[in-house]
Length: 222
Length: 254
Image 1 (spheres, one colour):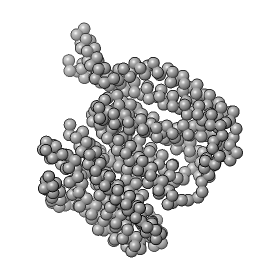
Image 2: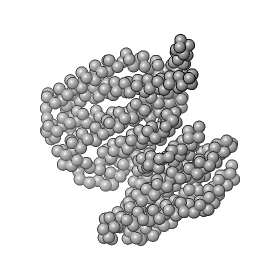
Image 3: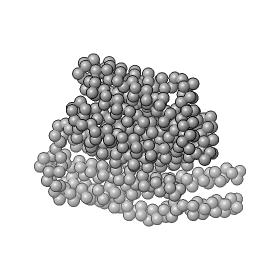
Image 4: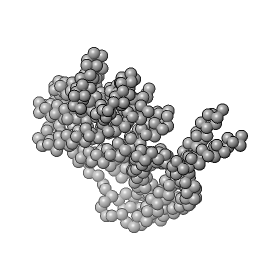
């Protein structure tokens, strides 16, 4: 079972490597939207370091929601999903593997780039550290929750707008705990409760969202 | 011709047996006049008591009268979401079409109650708090509730196949219902961190009965109104479904 899981992950990684630029586009979009904020609110370093965590987090939400409709689409269109559905492997399993592969090609890149964004927005080294930790805990949850929306809209032509409407309200807790952990570290308060809550949201979505996503995919394959 | 009619009738019988929308239809026909009557009389009584008899509040003045609309709308806004989520779960698990009809009919009503609560809250907030909107925990979570309603309604719009739409909407309603407590908790948490200016709250002296009695009448009136609206919308959904079934049947026989 685990072998199959790994092979699905490997397949998706290979595909995204061969097809190239989707994950690069996400990173460029993320980078662009973060660098637009200083142009919008002014270059004062004090202000930027204060709102920096929020800027990075909101940009991460938008960039993940904009690209998520692609997660199942290729497999849905070329029929691989149908074949997966016919095999003995549960669809929930496939969702989890695809989410992991997707995170490795997009979410992880964002996490790695976080320190650079922190420096651009003149955040302190401590808050950059917490920004990276919260993104590391938060981005998998974003993808898992987002996969529910992606699975429901996979067969639709104008699905990407609907995904934002369905998923962004569900992202609010992740955003709040992520940003407030960084705020706590800036104010020299323990950020442990927020980090624990982020972790619990991750565990929660790790268990529940594959079930919902698989149900969504089944509806679209009927 | 006669055969066709018999066929349709048989089909309808099956449709009735398949689930109990038919039974619901007959039952709701009996309830509807009563709930209409209750809605009109309770709201009229509540409005009369609230607007003419009840005294103005010693702190808020005349603007307290807004709560006779605001409080029932706000409480029913989340109540309707609960109805929607339960009906969706029932329809998803037991494949019961009636649950779909209920959830689909409830969503726009809930969205409108939410928007009424937000608008009346803003109108009340301006004279009382001095601002139309603050990012208070309760206000924010009501706004998020409104977005959840919009997402749910949108999913019915984009699917062409109504059976698929029903299932997808049911999933989104259930996911939303699981998330709602988490969102509520996170927004409360966020608000205590961002504690801003102090807010005058209603909780000082508990509400005086001169205000409470009209409020209860209004609340029951709103509830009856909700029942009437739900019944009318569900009946039209059932009728629509029947028309579709007949259309399919006729086109098959041609």
